[in-house]
Amino acid sequence: MNEQIAESSKAGVTLGAYLYAVRKTLGLTLRDVEEKTNKQVSNAYLSQLENNKIQQPSPNILYALSELYRIDYSKLMEIAGYVSGAKATAKRHSRAVAFADMNLTESEEAALLRYLRFIRSEKD
Image (cartoon, rainbow, N blue to C red; front, side, top):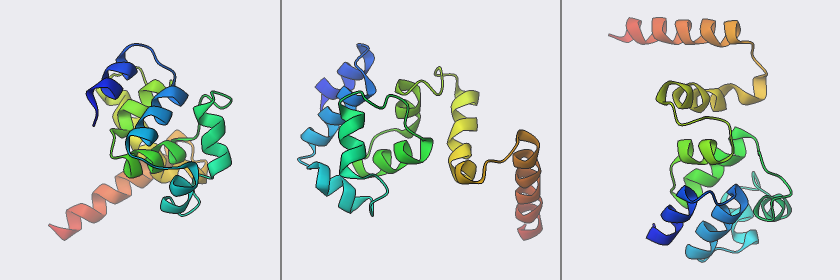
């Protein structure tokens, strides 16, 4: 990625400005992003993000953009204000994307993770 973009994210640039700079560097239009994310991120929504009308999009939106733009998801989570840079917190929020649309409580998520560990242990 362009060094100028990487530096701008460190200099306190808004999430919107950062996303705009990355999109422009990749040569994508708003409609390209909508198409390439299978309409998960509409061009109107991305425009609002880039113009700072929406400052904290859902983790699902950030994940879709990180995949398309090939940028670090945890960095977007940090710029959006979800995490403070602590590894443990970032790890917790990156897992949350998988459960975001289910509105799970912390205890439900913990139970699902225990069950996943159990399933994985059975494979070994």
